[in-house]
Every structure is written in C-alpha cells, then in structure tokens.
Length: 259
Image (cartoon, rainbow, N blue to C red):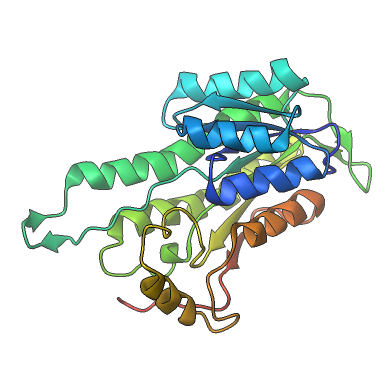
C-alpha cells in the first residue's frame, strides 16, 4: 500500500510513538486522523502536520467514540485505509504489595485500554475498510487496508510488577494472527510491533540517571529507542504487502530480566 490519497487513523497519536507515526505518514502524502484522549497533544500533532490532518477526542474503550473517529476519516477524506494502535497505559503494581493485594480495578483498566481498546479500533476500522473499493496490489490482488498494533517486549518477558501490563500486551500478540487470517479475504493485513524500551512520555517523567540506566541495558544500540524508529518500521509495514499476521520485536536485542 502507498501513502498518497490514503487515510490513516492513529489511535494515541497525540504523543510519543503515535505522533511520530502520524507525522511520518503525513510526510509521505497520507491523510491523518488523530484519535486521542489528549486534546492538547492531539491538536499539536495536527497543527504540526497541516491541512491533511484532523483531531477527534477519542476513548478507545468506547464504541461510539471510536466509531466517530472512523466516520471522521470517511467524511473528511473519503475513506479509511489504515489504523495504527498506539493508545495505551503502563501500570506498575505487585500482586502482593505492602498495602495489600494488587488492585483488581487497575488490572481491569490495563486490559480494557491496552487490549479491549485495541480490539475496538481493529473491529470498527476493519469493518469500514471491508466495504471500500480495493486497491490493486503488486500481483493484482485486492488490498483494502492495513492495521498496525503496539505490543511490548513485556508481553514476552514481563518484569515484577508488570502482570497487568504484560497480560494486556500478550493479548494483543495473541489476537494478531487469527485476526489477520480472518481479514485476509478482505485484503486487510494485521501486524503488531513489540517495542523495547523507547523514549516516550511514559519514560520522560523519570530522571536522566534512570533513563540512561534503562538504555544501557539494551545490547545494541545501548540506548533508548526513538519514536521515529517505531514510525519507520510502521511505514515499512504499510509498504511491504508480505508482512502480515506477525509480531515484530523492535528492541535492540534486549531480553528483560525479572527486575
């Protein structure tokens, strides 16, 4: 799939990985709809992109909210050809803590935002894509869209205190292949990126010392990943039709320890 004259919904595009992806896709000629609960960040991303971008305040866990974002893609730009799921939360809590057991509400919230929210975007975006006139692929096969999800290396090597986060992201991994298989008949691809330690707003509240320590754990390059590197992989996924049904680690070869 090419970018010009195609429209991409970026959930969580108000900052971090999503904002970098939105800007890169727009620079390639794509139309962008930013769907985020962060109104300030979403508006800033749209302002940085220009006239081929729109923002809509969106809660990915709410059906009507996500449907409104999908509808905006169609009303503003004539269709939807891709969706990138970058909205998420990063809780940290021990199963048996100093003040008692892990909060059930915080576990449910992590699963609801990271897993259910991702699924909500997938199902509504895919339904809209499935009704559109397809493009001709490289071998003349019909292609209607591409969906990119965001997982985490924690889904493979979750650390102490990451039970909720790891479970929610493992769920994203687990549904990638069955959804890709199901949507194949419509010419819609599904790929998940599992980033390692990236320099996003989730880490920017930490001290420079902690951030440097985290980066030094990466075998090579020994640093934090950048949102632009995530965006570059997302761009390649859009352009490479054979990438489908896969979970791709983007982590500098890190394998997380228990702590």
